[in-house]
Image (cartoon, rainbow, N blue to C red; front, side, top):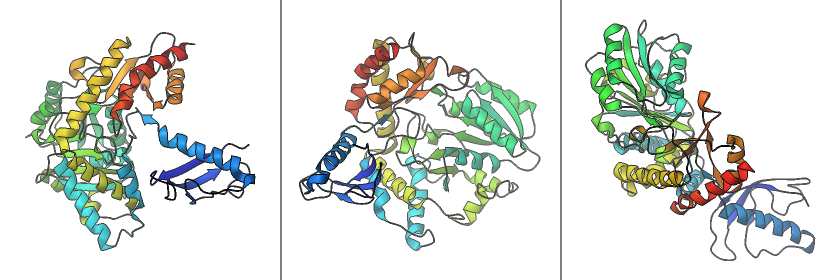
Length: 428
């Protein structure tokens, strides 16, 4: 009997006669033609089937039931799991981005994003279709005037990515570098600003997910203020997650994404701009057609956006605020981190970063003796969890577990036993 791979969407599991799912695709030998459930067909409990297809249907529905009950928990630092409410927002329907309904939606999101991150009234949001790196690139190239340079605070893969972005666009780069396990030194930033008189922007990663390290953005922002440079933060893995209230940080540009801490779907990113940043945008050369921030200030949608992902972000923002906003979301992340790190300690797993500098989500762990990352990953995936490898020079000896996104509390409570069993299986 052929094995089927089914992609589907749950609507309801209530009673016989109501739709429980919609098959979005089915692949196997002789499928979809041979399948009584072709693409987009409705699957109903108790549906009568012919004798010739009864086994086929039973296996098909068994596969659906398994997927409904055993959704993978993503313990990687993005993309993060999302709620059913956010997923369902994708079904609002098709909409042209030039229609007034989308203008209203976009206005609602742009108004809400600064408010959600306690920057309402001080920062303006620009929304761009793309991953978080699109926001990073837009921020860098839109903050530096002709003939000027950037100072990048670099203690991880994402600090290094900022340098690559600047160099790709011919922008001069100065660097303050520290070890991947040590937060950036604000005084080193002060010294670099004094040494170089061409710096138009200082760029720092808030949460370096390379190691799960937090940088002192508040202290760095105080030093950058008054220097004439803009302070740009990559907060993609920090927004709505980390304890530092951005209202307390003297920041000009905040890079974020719809997914991760806001629990929307991947595919939309944003930058939040202070008045000084908006003024600067008008002065910089047009280094990119698609990622030129000035174009987004002149027209809300200069290019076709991911409309359905905007629906999901709109829903995620409503959910976020209904659940208590910034204070409640960061509290949740602190509690999750405490829960799983207690489990790691009981399992004898060693954490790379000093407790004082750890983020609320990513934990970088030493691989247990006799266990490779791939074997541990595969054993955990069999048990319903997806973990993430270390990066760069840390890839051979470390792995990461991240408690980001919509994760049922009971699945986190079950992680200790599951992880212990996976480690033993990986050793075998």
